[in-house]
Length: 345
Image (cartoon, rainbow, N blue to C red; front, side, top):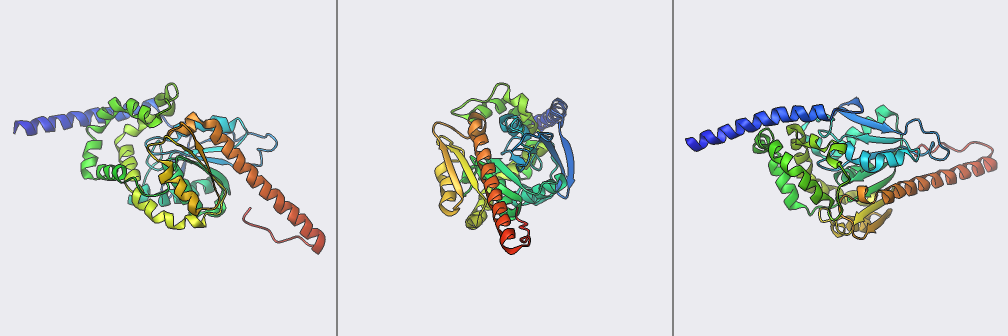
């Protein structure tokens, strides 16, 4: 009986710490963007470089940045947002459903397929007809799902350390277990106190063999993940990844958009040989860039290479557009009438 009383007391204390701790985190890291209402709930979006007018980039497709698991849009903003905005691209950053300040509705909200549908709605609201999509880790899986579901919306993909194939059973099993009712109890009692202790060393582990940027946790608002709802959302995302990837791989041969996949040969979270190498074997448009000595968070450590990949994709899009324009002029000269509009542009 005494043991039970002690356990209940610990859980109650943890619940109080979690409640007030979550409120403190939300006050410390308030939303900085705007909210867009879609069927999947209110989504938090930040746009950079909207008023850019430099020649060349002004007509380039917008760049959508999708963050990975356990983070929010602040991670991609710190790594790539400002770098791309200074090059006069319109940069769109989105908190994935349930993470950061975006809402999450429905049991299937953890599926990249459902998140792709929500992304489609968000881009509709923003008036974006076509974009270059950059995804890190889980965000890369989402980018692939989006390109398969909505290929006309995607000018090209830049995948950074993206899971593409099943083979992460231990990680997904653990997170699936946490996304259950016992996990709900843990998330609302002890996860935040323990997480506050381990979030810094956990971040350093994710960055290995590189190190996080100075004041990474504060600058990216990463502690937002410690809130119960965000933890449960993150666990559900990762927990369903193995099954989802097992189903998605059958469709990779349909990918027709230009893709550049950037990976680190020392990524122990998403090993390139188990993922991108297999994607490149079945998807003809993938250019793989493997960086020696880099780990999983190479969008920070090798940000210039990721930006160069975006510029490469944009150049390919512009070259295709120029070729089609030249063909249109030629057709007009020969036939004396305007060619049919190509609605894929």
